[in-house]
Length: 209
Image (tube, rainbow, N blue to C red; front, side, top):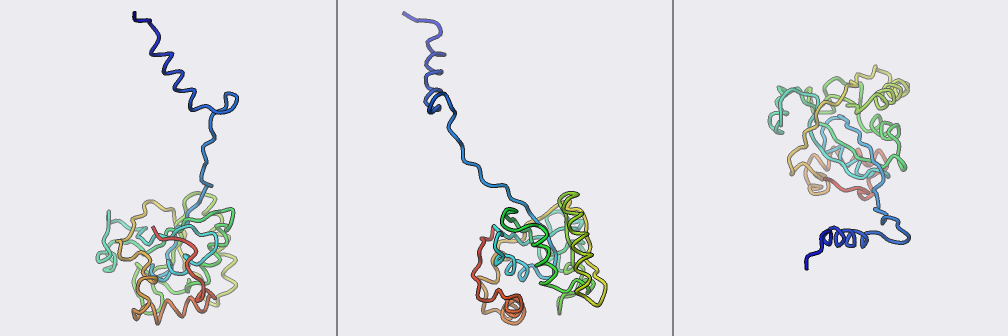
């Protein structure tokens, strides 16, 4: 004989298997909150290699930002016609390293006084730039730039602008230094910069995405 409501009762009984203790729902582990910084400091191969070695950084993704072209390719960005800069999106744990500390490394890892140029790399795609996510990051970036000026004889030309869209770079750019240490650019540009920053003997503490 069919008894109305038996299905609902069974469903309720099944639901109770997801409850533990004295009526308390099972705790679901939550990943700690992370933040991101999007920075342009010349060729993103170099920027990625540096920040992968900074404690508190979780991942680094090379990409493009600040331009007009939708889903740009590396070849398009290299022409300078897209308006995009080569950037690195740095995901970090703010409990271990602050946004301000990330910016401290940013100022030390490139020359922010050269307009649209880093070393032999020339063009707007290599400009020094901080793309902020919110007003708090904007204020921190502006204060950091003002403080960093004391370390340079020439005026800092780094732009501080709102991030509108980040486009990940092609797969072959990711972990470029780790996979191509024998390449000329890695040997003569990236490796000396890591040495200068005291990071040459440090293995990557974060993963690429």
